[in-house]
Image (cartoon, rainbow, N blue to C red; front, side):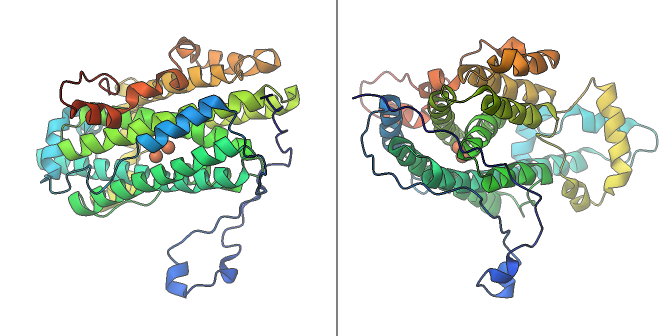
Length: 397
Ligand SMILES: [Fe+2]
Ligand SMILES: [Fe+2]
């Protein structure tokens, strides 16, 4: 069967200025429900295709794997596990409360000066809850964006795959929400940085920008963030939950790489330039994570009072508290973007910018389309339950 040329990416301008509250009056819901939602207007066009041929073989393979590796959030996780949040934090050691916070407490005049171990443990529990809350909100954003891909992508194989991803993201949202609700305490609101980033993807008229932003940037970020927490946590329910979520996320990144590398072969230099600018804009501003101000409010410490000490402590300890995490993120992202051809398009425009930021050391790390099966913890666990089977896939995660 002959390969069809990729459809052109819509060149409609990106999202315009957002008007908070626009459309609220049109939502047919009681006021108390309206207060608990956020409305986002999507400018993309839905695509109904009549071409049902299954000729994108790599996407067919990925879709079949997605169906086979679905897991059940109720029966595959042991929700009866007794979780003591303080124990979880104690077992995480310095990874629960990074050294920066302890250094900030030693500075003259610091609002944390009187803190002892109980306060630091409480901070650790709140930081963990804040982190999982961002995961939960991000997963809901991923669910909505995956549903948008079902609607807007022109290829039937990609629609099928995005539909499985929508289910995956629903399960992820649900398990993080349930863990916070039943094992920790009240969740935190979505960080403004994550909110802004995901809302822009939901609004954008260009369907491939939703792909690029979610499947490549945010999914790479998620893989790094989940991987970091999975490495440092010992609590068995959370550890298994993260392992299973990562198993799905790696497949989602592979989906983005397979779809976009086909599309980008057919774009003009100007269109590729827009995508490169999107990546530079979304990666070079260091806004992937920040301390949630509500954590300090909950602990009774005025945010304004503590921030100068945190900044001084960050300088003293040699930089950002999240430096290690940022490295893990770019180690995932850069090889994935290289595979899309976006590093070298337009005379290496993005290569130059990322090179100046010192990110090219990761260029030849393994891309996620190559290694996603290594993450398949669900298949690995199922195989391990088969008598006489040697576990392989997913064993490294
Ligand atoms: Fe997810
Ligand atoms: Fe995902």
